[in-house]
Image 1 (cartoon, rainbow, N blue to C red):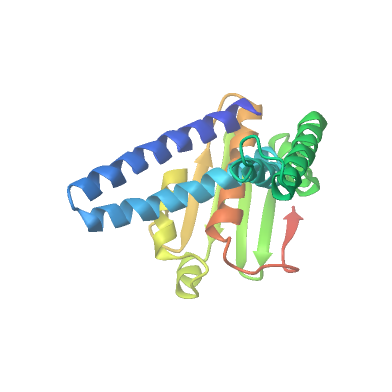
Image 2 (image 1 turned 120 degrees about the vertical axis):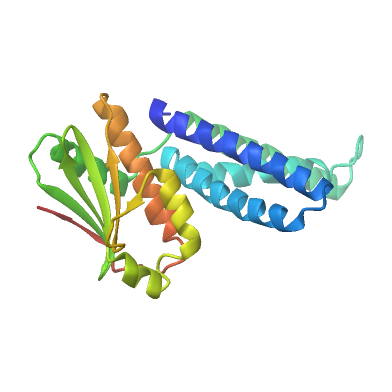
Length: 231
């Protein structure tokens, strides 16, 4: 796993554990409204963690499903039993263990879409491009340009995105947590990423893009409408 991506996941895991403790404390103190808000934050962090884990390993979901089946099926096997049901689950568990080992031995496959974004960002940092625009659908885009020694991301048309519920008001704290700020006019989200290590900078940019595209916009149907522009 890339070091920067690893750090992002570790940070979110810490936040997840902290929110779980806050929820327990709030329930004990009968502060149910506070527990509700912490629960919403926990769900948002959970989505972000899942996004980053899938970004790191596109086979993450399949591996988790296999592990879950192995755990749950193990409870259905009778100790010392030799009945038909126990034998069935024993065989399925062995089959799933073999598939899981095969996937682990394969390593993490590359994602073609991720490779394309990576290539464009590399060219942008090398000043071979002026900018990259990831268009999710007409009027919904994430723009990326060079900014000094780093990168600047912008999401234009914020007022319209909020009005059309493409970005929910509840998503704004999440975007702020990623480092986005709202311009004085209130019509654009802006984020500047500056790091001395170019590889870490690019990985952080891709991780943020993944969270924004797959988490913030996760409930929106942009299938067949998304493309990448370079200029």
